[in-house]
Length: 152
Image 1 (spheres, one colour):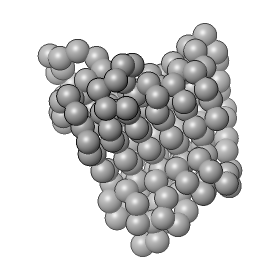
Image 2 (image 1 turned 120 degrees about the vertical axis):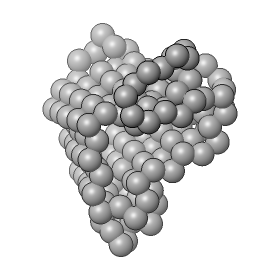
Image 3 (image 1 turned 45 degrees about the vertical axis):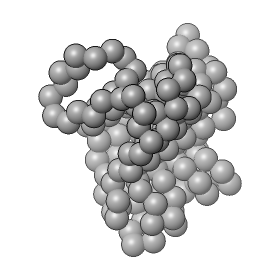
C-alpha cells in the first residue's frame, strides 16, 4: 500500500504476486512508476483512490477468479480527483471466471489510459457515478480542465 507518496520518489520494477488484498494500492499521492506487475491478487490488481494523480508506464496485470484488474475510485467531486495517467499496459483476465469488469472507474474518478491491451475479460470497462466529468474517445482534444475527464 502506497500512502500519499510524492512524485520525488522513484519506483521502478515493482512486482506483487498472490496478494491477499489488492496487488498494489495507491492511497492518494503523485508517485510515478515504471515496469509494474501485479499477478493474481485476491481483490484488485491495481487500486487507486483518494486523489492519486501519478503516472505509470509498462504495466502488466493478471487477474484470477472474479477480480478487477484496475480499480480507480474517486470521492464524488472532492478535490483532488483521482486521475492516474497510464501508458503501455496489459490486463489479462481469466474468462469465463472473472465476472467483474477488467477496469472499473467510479465515484468521480477520471484518468488517461493509452496503449492498453485487455484480453479474456467478459466486461472491459465499467464507468459509473461520474459526477462532473466529461467522456471522450479517440484523439485527445480536451477543452476542459484537468482532472475532470476520462480519456481511453
